[in-house]
Length: 273
Image 1: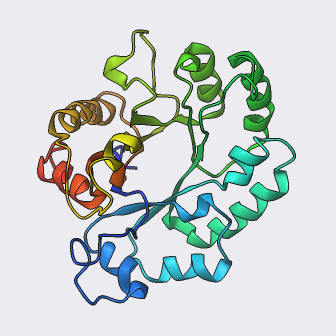
Image 2: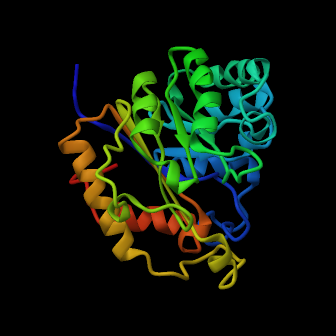
């Protein structure tokens, strides 16, 4: 069996205002977007699954419109992470996993994206971990799960050890609320599974003060991407992960596809992705 890391890189969602004419050819029908997208990138993080579990026919359509080597990641529905916050949501998760199973071998990873929790939600990290521990223990095998935490004070060994115990990946994010790996003051092992999940999210407020068109880069992120390139090299060559997922959204630099294309053009991983 090959030990070479499989790299999956793309954007967060495959549709956005401003992409027709800048990424998608003018006149291309929306029904053809995903098939075209898959000629440019090897993976996509589905954002629409955050709002609700998609119909089985929709998921089968995604499968049919992409080539054999294409890989999907998907956000877990917000009813689980934001509305019920892991309480009494077993049926919701089962429904979501049943739909995602239609992707078969193209299903890469599933992301629990939590928002920032204030003291009215959880008084402390310990309270959150008390909620999280039994939930992670109940997760079914056979899936790759990643978790995104936006309370920066909670990023410590207690959290990473819990993720490592259950083979769940800590999502590494470039986002205004949370220190990036090279900015963390603690010497913390951020690899908690046999795969890593990186998200380039940016500062929503800052970027929306500069653009709402999403058709071009408006913030130079070259220096940051070079930092992420070093992290990617380390994850691949030293940690020898099975999979590495990397996704960019529009709020990172102004145009998600251009961010991904910039990273690919760097040839930072030494081979075609």
